[in-house]
Length: 255
Image (tube, rainbow, N blue to C red):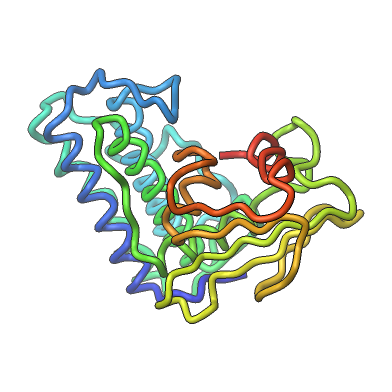
């Protein structure tokens, strides 16, 4: 399923998140640990994001039909000069957005098969917003996202979630349902999803529905809770019904 957001909107979100990450990079020590990615330092997170932008952008430019090795990303090494690093982060996002703009509807490889180049703009936008939140949380800043971007991030993540989670068992028991509701008024009711388990895996539909558990809150807070960047009991999040269902979901889905 493609994004309901335009390419221009996604590109703006990508570049904004990259600029915020660059701001953290400019002001924090590269050795700062990232609690929400406990194996990473800020340097490692920055390298990952900047290289991912260049990797995705190069695949789009080449119109690849097979995965390009991550190490082949051009200029994928974090600059030695700390003063050059914020600009390096921003440049990678700009390059990706421009590559997708030039590619138009051309199809390229993705881990879901051949997809229009815009797949990578959407994927990297939401990847970057979450990792920017990681960096901001690590230095004591409160992450925030516009409701439309956060809701699209939830939608994209739900599309990618496997029916078997991350190997810890199915995130929903058979016959159990969960409803997610992003309550931002500007979404006009568009930020609602019903998740259920079928023999084929997880099924996701949009719209309002009754479920065994309903989880409500602002779209950005809901996204960061689902991605386990904020705790389950984060202020603003309301869990109605069987809270154990949501707890199991959080423990059995990738982040």
